[in-house]
Image (cartoon, rainbow, N blue to C red):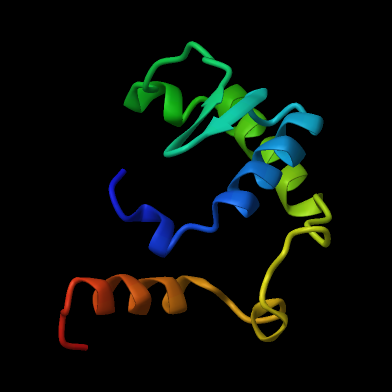
Length: 103
């Protein structure tokens, strides 16, 4: 969306999508254009509450999360001082600054 380039590194987003696809955990990336990207549509639906607690689905979910945590993201162009630090709070702070919210 509008102005998201101020807090989303688009090149890292594309590289992450490619890495996830290599691990069979994401969509195929096709191309980028001036203000967006084009990637594969994967059909799906929202799980029901019963499905969320289904042991087979929980197992699949856990296996997928484990695969994600095993991916080496070394090649992404990340600021050196952020490589070993959590990014969530820095991102939230940047968003709040963009919205001029006191924190």
